[in-house]
Image (cartoon, rainbow, N blue to C red; front, side, top):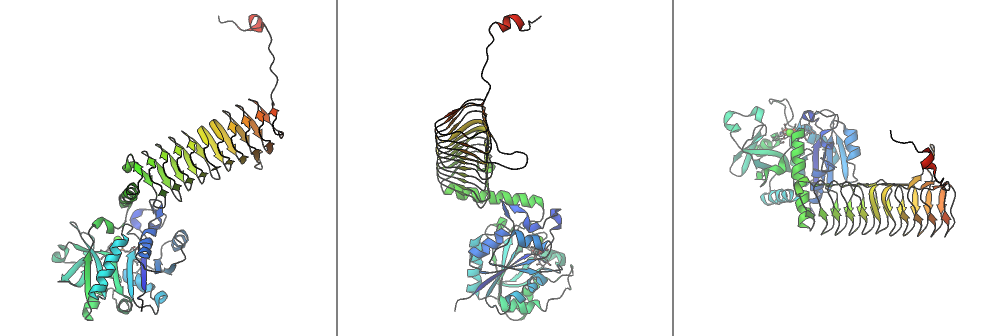
Length: 460
Ligand code: UD1
Ligand code: CA
């Protein structure tokens, strides 16, 4: 019979030291709410039944971290970690097998560590296995009291005597339990301790009293089990996670000129031979192809950039899709809904929004293109503006293939420009232009000969 696996993640605590209006587990690390990391580690280690115990701001936590494989459990009052797990008992009624317990504020725990914990727990046939760490300064943590391999009990800092406080092996708050045993033991917990709480840690002594095997396994890297309690630790965890993401990307073939100043969310994917310069930020659901260059100060959010594109310094790209071999910036702004089919050039101080540009079309300088559908090989002169907004509604500009737009042109939308036409510089286009036409919409030039000799003011 296949042994089923369940995980309970505790996330009901308030996180007082964050000094925040938000629930602690919603604070992001590399673009993801902190809680998503233990959830993901549990999933990847094969724990299919996921329960999350929520209390403070439970509504916003459930909303932000929603996933179909999670069952949410409410702990209305935070009476301690033992009480928190007990709250999940009803949702796991009838479940027997390995029960993993994680804390929502321990985001750096690796999947491999959970797999090692599980293999050890199975090999030792333990009822309780605690994941521990050797800490040079164990202050604040529960201490592991052993007799050889058997863990006799866990003593909280506030309940420990001087000798117990010397122990450097600490409880990380991560455990594997025999589910049936732990739920029966939780029912007998007492609150006769320094904090007057139901301590989950007391189930260890209960297991020993019941003649069960209790074990502890130590993590190799103690930074993995770091708990986030304040914003300094949040920044520390972010830096560690950033390093993990960046080393993973560099090993897969991405060049980073300075990985300490390169900010890539956990969700981002990047192809090999792409080069990221310092201070690049890639956020959210972003995909960067192969052989791209992203210069300093480039920010890309929820966008796709295809192979061979070059994003020059200071360009910002949001919710956009760029085909191959685009040349963007410096200082270009592509706002949501921008689609560049490929081989497009968008130069400095060009802003685009909700517009599509066919292959090879370009706009090299100082232009606004909004709500426009533009064909192939269209050239926008410097200072072109699509006047898409009449104060009440947005209107569309359509420009067919091979149109040449002179400098300083305004398209007062809605307007349609036929293929292969030419718009004279300085024109304000308010009417549709048929294909193959020259459109001029400006005053004809008048020269008054000799005027300057007669009228031009003289310098005194
Ligand atoms: C706990 C352990 C301690 C361990 C430490 C590791 C106990 C009694 N002590 O102490 O041995 O060294 O974690 O970080 O378990 N929570 C709830 N509901 C509650 C109380 C807590 O959901 O009623 C959640 C918190 O949101 C947090 C986690 O449980 O995610 C740990 O709670 P916390 O109060 O931080 O426990 P510690 O006192 O640090
Ligand atoms: Ca804690």
